[in-house]
Length: 198
Image (cartoon, rainbow, N blue to C red; front, side, top):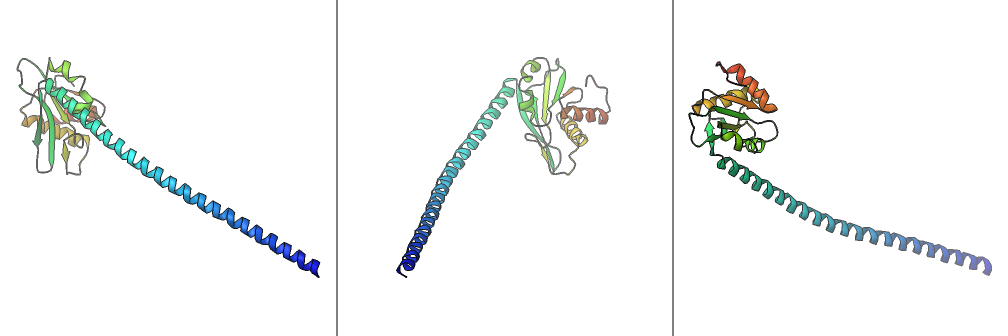
């Protein structure tokens, strides 16, 4: 009986050691998990801070580039001009400071994904020597906007044409790039005049 009792006692002690070992392992795992989650949250906070800083640096960089592009247009003797077409639509143009009658007029219409300054920053300098340049921002790009639901290239063309009328620009050639080419095509449809070049 002592042998049986001794065996049971040993089994019980062995079982307790195993439970204690499992408990220690699970406590180790919990502590490891807690430590990992603490480090993870610290790392996540640091990354969020860095992303925020990088995001702000990106905004500062873009703002700086935007200012430099505006300066480039100003150095080409151009000025920004905003025209309210109606109570819902505003068009933004870059126009010559002084229209020279001995130069032909050229309208540059940018493509999708940018505004006039970004699209034509390398072209305005050489073109401004030979042309009176008018460079609009298409609606929803740059500083041109509307609250109207019509967002077609035909509506864009009408708005550019109306803006040019208000600037007293009647005879002109047009260059359109990408989406601006579609808008240019629509301008040719709606303007009943003889085009110099399209």
